[in-house]
Length: 251
Image 1 (cartoon, rainbow, N blue to C red):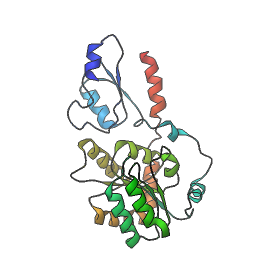
Image 2: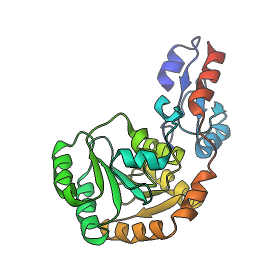
Image 3: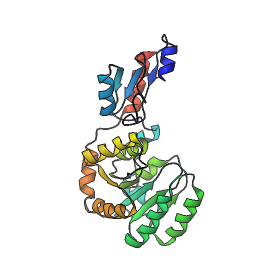
């Protein structure tokens, strides 16, 4: 992006970071000729410190579907998925291609939380989908392959379990879901900022391994109201609309 801005100085160039922070220096910020639309305070502070032309957004840009108004309440959404409306639901998602951790979670929940309602989003991992589907036959679970309608399932859930990806966490928080996020040596540098933000704002908890997750699920269930109240205090994400307004200024 920075190279393009320098090569075509007479053409307005806009960069919209999709992370909470940079994983390494100048990962997002480079050319002084570009304009940066930034959705986190960490990046806003860096842009200001380095005197980049920047404009704050209220968060990372979400897919338009997340801004749809749905008339159905959460209880109705749960019922349509075959779940009980009066019991909490965990949404478990580890990226577009799933993760073997999801199978461990499914097996562990069977033994330790047999009555916990779950929505498993397995993505393009068909083998994982069939493995969890087989386990789910006698469980209060909804198992889904790849879907573009994530927001429908999030609106039926009460909390989220997954990786600290900036996109999915932004979506979960937008849908007022507290989060349990995996962290460890595989966590990318820019994802660590997501984990730190979650813990600082008390929007959820992090877990390091499967055994740790089982303990954190209990904490989440015991204090679900507390985490939901904290999540509800996060300002509404209007970044997609804010960015369109800003882009018009550069045309």
